[in-house]
Image 1 (tube, helix red, strand yellow):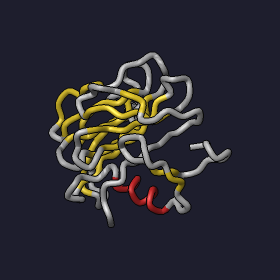
Image 2 (image 1 turned 45 degrees about the vertical axis):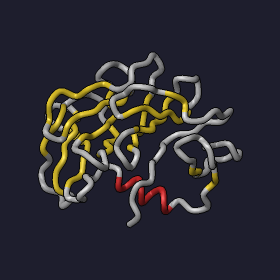
Image 3 (image 1 turned 60 degrees about the horizontal axis):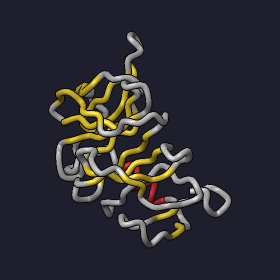
Length: 176
């Protein structure tokens, strides 16, 4: 957030209480690196651009760099986040015009759009440790704020009221 006058890292409880400024960024960078990995750590969701067609697709595969198995070829893909308790991957796509949060099963199938709004950006989904909720950043209030919703996209609400911007949430789930 920029609430201290410059960009700083903060932590907050899921109920919107307990806001605290972090003094080091290593816990967040470590947690962010974990977002795209499956719970067993053997697979990683990634976005990749096909140089021949220009299409971007979401795929998963072993973290050892082997070829990815494509899950969807929607446009504007970014920020894949693997559910810590299941085989679902939340991601950002511009397939419907704006950056919205989508959900796809690891086995493939038709992606489900979770957010729909007229503002250009719902971004950076991150799962709760129990896989029941997703926190994300959105500019639907006119500035970047943190929002929370159920994993099926229902009950979307502002996480906490602030006059400042907040973005790129990471729900810390794992100690490594």
